[in-house]
Length: 149
Image 1 (cartoon, rainbow, N blue to C red):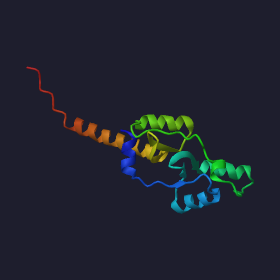
Image 2 (image 1 turned 180 degrees about the vertical axis):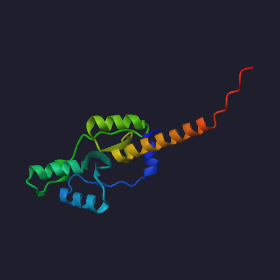
Image 3 (image 1 turned 180 degrees about the horizontal axis):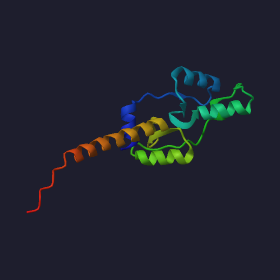
Image 4 (image 1 turned 90 degrees about the horizontal axis):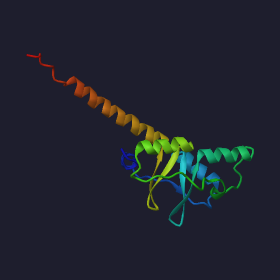
């Protein structure tokens, strides 16, 4: 299974923000859309990711206030990325190593979508469940051995 399979099931809705936007505005969007990340785009290019991790870190540093901070100031400007051809197990390994909950998917420099660790976990569970069903069906239909003559 590849990352492109996850994107196919997940759909292609993307939520983006500009780097000069206020963090407060971005947080409002995340809250209204019930999402944990926004892709930061500038001139049609991915320039970063804003996730609830960066928002919480900003709150911690500023005594619980977001103030007038811009997305550019708090975003992850080197987010972990993958391609649609990346295998799901490789994506899972990459996300675990970097403690990344969200990962943009790029085809060359074109943003194809964002996958979450939840998306990857669900895909792995569904794949294992399917394989389990196939193995059980195979075992159930196993031909009986004929006695040796």
